[in-house]
Length: 471
RNA sequence: GGCGCCGUAGCCAAGUGGUAAGGCAGAGGUCUGCAAAACCUCCAUCCCCGGUUCGAAUCCGGGCGGCGCCUCCA
Image (tube, rainbow, N blue to C red):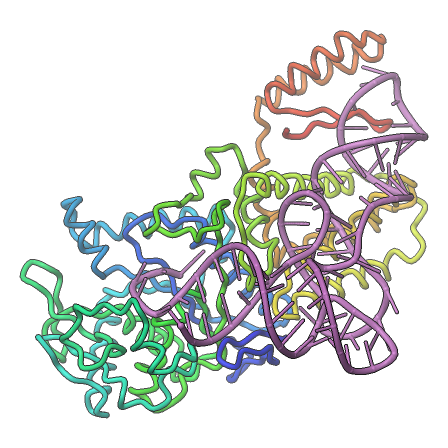
């Protein structure tokens, strides 16, 4: 398994450091609003990584994804809504789980909330450890990390001190810090805002501390194997996570850093809540597209390249997925076949190709190429009536094997489980049309076909009979 | 101002030194009552200019264009 590592800016061989279990942490959502498809691009990419590690590389996975349920935004929004913070953020955690299920994300082994008591305690303990090692100072009631005490600071983002300080956009109002790069660990809170005192005095966690503390708490001592997130987290979030974890423990935090590029809007701008140009999963579904197709679109561009979202590519994803589903349907209906020379070897080669592509830094687009090449040959073998029932089953097993990682057919099957009109009515209409065609009453046959199409059902006639499928 | 990524056919997208995967759309053909699906055929020399090399989309240099980070952000 080869994996690009932001730390080294290179592709490296990946093997978990302990046992055969990959210990991975992925930064999750700040739950003050519903996640948008840009957020989910990252989560889907992490899901593909996780599935590749499990089903291709053969490792077990212990995957942690957090919910940030305390920060300025969650506090402000819950105030506005007049709902207790915990209840307010719970709503968006539920919404996230709904969207994650729609996109077929495998549930991580742990999904901690920052404000769970044990996690807050772990943060407080880490800050205390940082204090003992001389990395902190207090100012205006808050506790800060003093960057100058950690010479290695900046190794991930590769920003030098001068570059940061001279940056034109440093907020000059934050003069309570000794150094522009210093960041808050534990934040003094005004009256009426959530506050905890677990050993380092009253306050609430700064943004970065939860991830360092929860990762080590749930995954065990560092270094963990892989830390994941969107590229925008490289600095300052991940850089600061490293500073906290390594400052507190003296041990490296994470061996690999896996960063997913942004999803851009059609106009080329980053999709983000602060820019207000966001689409949620629901928005996509309301336009008539399926979640399976959205997942397909999100995985069809390599995770380290920007993905520009458009309705045209959304439609292309629908069509590509339909092609796979049609082939799967045909394979299921194969009844005869004399046997296809070399078919078994062909399947093995396709499977190897698929796995090899994924093993090369999770090259999903390349792996999809392997699927479609095999697919065309399968269709040809069905056309030629050479494919045996056994070979058809083996081919279906190939697709299902691919889908253990791609996770897209399983979604589509669930979406299409029930016909869009009652089965009995559909059966009657199909029977009536078969009779009409038998009588060569094509006008009536076409009328039924057109009527069904307007209700979302497409009919296809062949020598073997008529099949229906969703439009 | 600093750092970094990217630029492959109408659209989407792999490939990172050995002579351009795949998907969508399009054209022609086969099959079909028709339609659809499927199959076959066709459809790019890789932003531009130099350089290195027997050989470059792939390496180096210089342009042009797009995006990101340096501030909350997946």
